[in-house]
Length: 255
Image 1 (cartoon, rainbow, N blue to C red):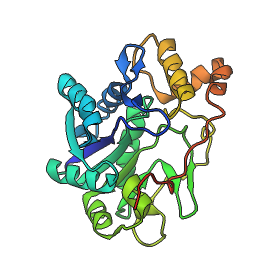
Image 2 (cartoon, rainbow, N blue to C red):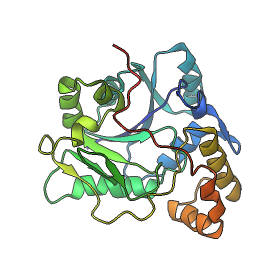
Image 3 (spheres, rainbow, N blue to C red):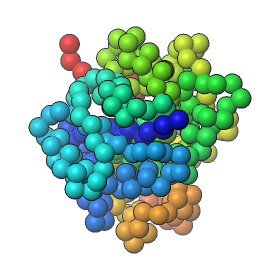
Image 4 (cartoon, rainbow, N blue to C red):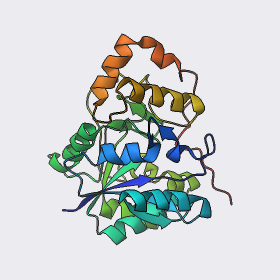
């Protein structure tokens, strides 16, 4: 079984353009994500899926320089970008990661893949967050999300999904309607969901730079190490406490 992580990345972020190549204590943010994800035992490959826009040539250049796999596709139809990338790579199972999450944890990636593979009842989609028709409920900090789904489920979504936000955000079609797919989420209650470790704004970027600086530029720390750091320095959470997370139903697509 070939398990491939596809990490979506583009330069044209609406709130913080160029963020994926922003410096994070000596390395581009995207490189921080890829290097951490590569430590996951369960992944056969970690590949960047970017767009065919000229601005994203810079992402392709970084990938080639670092030896990262890269696939280019539609700028707005990210579901199509994922599907064609998965086809090209011969993926049986796809792990969806985001390039703006430089604290992604390889241990959590492995745990979520194991949850998907080891379920007593076969499932189409598993995540380390609780997904539902109304909204997403996290148990981990924002920025540690891992989604795992079968290629067959991805292909069905690619054929059937029509709403703009389904095409842009890739996975809502898989989990938002009960009974459409077999979905599995974590069973424990939220405990660190109030923390925000993704990068959408200048404040977010300042926070992750501070975290990496505390670990002297290393990237081998775990998410628990960062929780402990916040326990010692609770003021860190205030850096981006005012940033609002966008809903998965928001879309930048145009008619």
